[in-house]
Length: 399
Image (cartoon, rainbow, N blue to C red; front, side, top):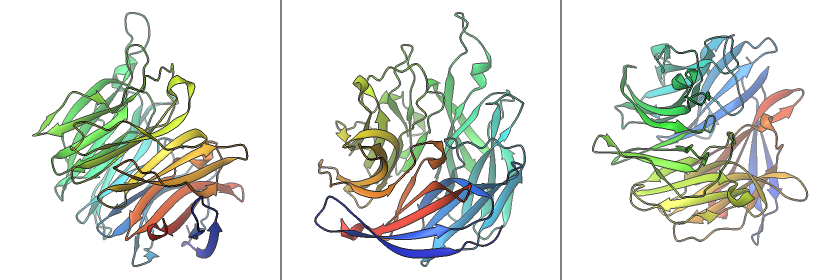
């Protein structure tokens, strides 16, 4: 793989505010196909992972940081030809102290959705600590994925994932048992400890989300009831005990299949924000709810979209009381990636159109992060017969 060529250009885009915003486009040019980005912000820098693959499906997991206004040289963390590569179930990562933990998916059998979660732990310097070790140790040939990772205050990492070990069995009615969501801790040495099942019935293929507060980790995901209500649920670890999962809000969305559209949770001290997609009452919507009590209760949802929502949300705290939300929606002209600022008191900014965007799977799930009052968004575009990553940034001071 050749090094990134970073092309900077200034773009003016129309917003519904009284002035135009300046967006700086950072186009990464690679060999092969590049997609499945995961973007995080930690310790004064951004970190990006993604998968590069060729026509023979030889794949590599890559990592780099954005520090001092430039990208570090990319590191290749893992390579393989038997991976499960999917637009919705993409690798994730987190940084804790001087360590980075990354995930990817490897096929375990010939079935379409039989794959395991593999992890790599190394120092930011590139020194390997533990390579290519499996997260789900159940041994079942089933689906395991949709991973979320957060730091554990320099003690290692918290990790959660969807686990299909029970789906290989059938219930009395002949249906397969549901997917579950599990949690574990990864130590600084790469040991997997304190593994537990959080919920025995969850939506099959929606992304999970995890954040760490000063009272412990909080996990948000799409639940699945016996009546096929698939609303967003939250569970917290308080005093080393996991609470019974409860809904962030009772949308009452009944759907007989997975919408492949997960939530996102972020935290800032005692404040939490959760954004999600729903089609309750037949109306596609992106909602946002705040908690000012570490997730013990949430405010009524704030509707984010103005047109028909597609979802694929992300959210990041801008300051103690405001977040930025990214989402996709479609109007009479086309599909757009848009951004709004939302405050805990319910004030919502006018939308900012980041880009016209393909509504299909190739777009992936756009990633949003904030660093030093700069907003960064990365997603996948199709150019020159290959998937490529596109990143833009804009100043939050212009909102």
